[in-house]
Amino acid sequence: MMRLPQEPNRNGGIRTPSPRSRNQSQFHSTVSVQKNRRFNILILIFRFAAFCFSLASAIFMFANSHGGGSDSLRWYHFDAFRFVAIAAGIVALYSLFEIGASVWEISRGTTVLPEVVQVWFDFGHDQVFAYMLLSADSAGTALARTLRDRDTCTANNAFCVQSDISVALGFAGFMFLSFSSLLSGFRVVCFILNGSRFHM
Image (cartoon, rainbow, N blue to C red):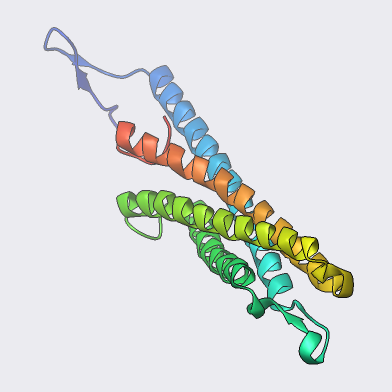
């Protein structure tokens, strides 16, 4: 017959934990695991949305070439649009990596990198790439307005419309990357306070 684990009490004697206390401990552990799983799934959703919008932004900009001859307009003719295309492409690649890392964590219950490295890696890169994408799309917005003020879009309206779509998609990607950054920042706080990326 298996003995129940025993614990010392205040008077130095032996106390056997009751089945009720063990059940409560198991219940709280199960609830904590479920909450952490939902939290990781929410991060995955934001990562996937950031990937989709950033990839779409990059594709729209890379494919933005209209007209022929000397009057043709190409995205690479403008520094700001090059910035938009490259920044969106980098964020899409980064988001794809983070999607894989999130799927790995949800399925296996552990991080791809050591926990302390993963927590700071996610938060730091979220901050850097979110700022980069915001800067690129802000520059793209300013250039798009300048082109319209110069009547460039009168003769090449399709080019301007596609540029606007690309920039708008980039801002959407920034928004979802910012949401991911907030959640990764929350995990950093949990790690600092609790020594674990999970909130207790």
